[in-house]
Image (cartoon, rainbow, N blue to C red; front, top):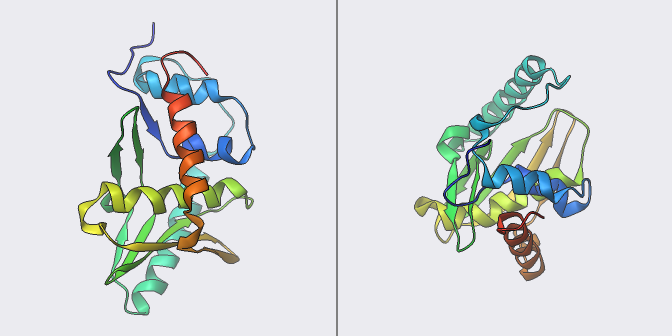
Length: 181
């Protein structure tokens, strides 16, 4: 029997495909939010994690080097991990890169696969959560960028409007509810 979490915990990427309709199974996110991942067996997949990690790291290093060459101070993955505690659940995530100049910042996420609307939503979740979860970014206005090997997609801070916030909150409440989604 999988061990239940004390309170629901949701990793940001569990929500993104649900928000844009790329998947509709809220139960999977509900299950992960309510059960410790080490306590249940996962179905083996065909995903080549080693190749993905090599490609992702190479792209991440390229982006970081370009940003630092332009004089930016760059914070990477583990430095960006956040935990945002809400009333119904805790939201966690780890943006690839963050830069900041004064009260302006940019959150970058490197993607090596096929472009997807859920990638944009992932960065938007980060743009919403980071200034609320990490005190060093309180009051910072973030833009976002999804960076693919051959292009960048800019996400303006204005994308984090009340409709986005409401939709994110509603999904978090459904995924963290006591009754399965």
